[in-house]
View 1 (tube, helix red, strand yellow):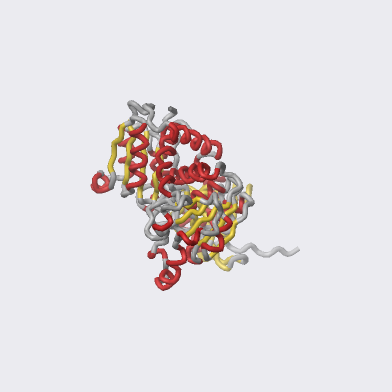
View 2 (cartoon, each protein chain N blue to C red):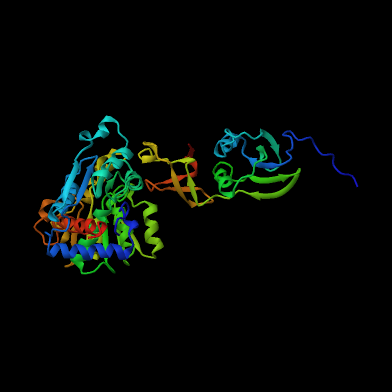
Length: 301
Length: 154
């Protein structure tokens, strides 16, 4: 992985993905190590993302590296009309690694072809967000002991949710049974189902959480956004069907864990938070370990 | 034995070079652009809306003293999937073949996704052809699929 960019989860093989997870487990035990001393990581956030940015910056700081960059495009020369290519070429001169979040799809792949240092994609529009995918995999393995042979449910906006797409792609390598719960307007796209089919795995589609809930080990919740619906009446009709509350968990498996890429709005009722099955905040913490592992591996440390 | 008198060719024959036949009439100019015939010094003859037994109407292009690599010629498969390539030497047909859709397409097609970097900055497009018969192009950058009916040309 040394000196390689990570744009899409597929850029790394299954073995490499597992290597990152194993390395992350070491950082979980010992999060503060001085291995990044003398290294400069550029953190270029062309659109704001507090959680992802702070998690990367926390990862670098815990490893004693230095961070340069900006947290929104208005404070960069993009606002003066500079092209992405020029920004990336310039920042390549100032850093050993670039972490980039950008609203344009494909921007991260382009940046990785232009840059003279490796790029980590921290989200390119609705396309890819591979570090979220790795931290989701890490969390699933941490809570279930393994990534193999699990029943995993995805709930909410399966059509536009990029974290869902990458995670389905990645889990198709692990003999997963998929339970896909969404309104019919927001079903998983066929281009993503293709990965499940190619791996000869099964998936089941539902309109209702309750039907799938007793069968699954992981419940991966996502937010349904009003603007995704062509018909606002349809949104009003379905919005409450995809809200999880604590009473719904009565018949769920003991090992069930509830994940969410965050930020949450109202799709998980706050009465779920004290339930030990709620795991979304620990999930966010894992983002730091996984990003430490990724940065260290790419820098060959 | 009676032979049919040979009809006069509307686009005259060439001595040496390449004939690209069975181009849809409306695609002739695109083919010329893809093959950069708008920049060549060679003699180029072309016709559009010619009669064709197979297709009703067709276009044809003849280029004197020029031969194309397979890679170059296969690029036109996007706009002229049924085109025939004929290579001529001393007025005789030396090679006759069909174009085939390539595995990769670079620079000539646009991604349909308005939020793709290739439509926003000056990035040469790159696609993997994921379906050759129905023409589905997977963008190397935004990873979205452009379908045949949405293909536009640079």
